[in-house]
Image (cartoon, rainbow, N blue to C red; front, side):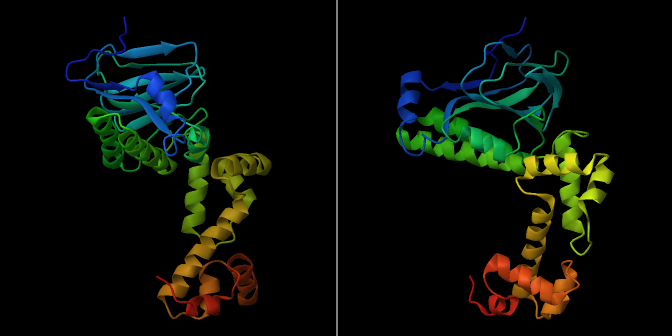
Length: 288
């Protein structure tokens, strides 16, 4: 038998639904609102099964122990240091491991911007289990949410809790997906592009490394990143070019070569098309 709450040392706050509806009409919390939150230490026998979807997203952060989740029919294990984000409107279930019960920080989210935030954070789809790059920061943000909701439920406090929740979702953009997932394939491709700016890495080469067809890989990359492969590569190269222009006295031709443009004239044209000015004029601009 699994239980929803009632664990020694737990913390739990639920925003009254009339108050939630009011908050969803106000600026700030209209975009994103924490409706429920809590902390369940060593939650033995904890679990929920929701065959009827709910309107809120469910966020779980496991800091100790283990558990599992099933989201839209996809089963995944959850271990310490991992987060689960379940989008609204999706049937799901989750529970604590019977031998090594998890400790959870958790929250439920609503709001007009919620679907977009989940999409930007790559938190939707089958890879709902993520590993935050900075676990201590993720925990601190959820703890901040709970502490704010425990303090009072004024509009200002709800807005502050929403801001912390927003920040937490933003951290998921840098979270590592499970090994072997589609997100992992895209993540490795992004890492290769970042490490090898001077190389003429092609979509075909990246697809071959991922053991996918070029068209499938390109579609997957664009869906995950929001940009085509070559446009993403150009952004990386231009970011490095700006850094070199700002921090070194290297000639434009040397910078062009370092970021993958053997032809300095072509580099300058590309730079101008993106920045609206030439590399030398960019270097002379006052910044900071």
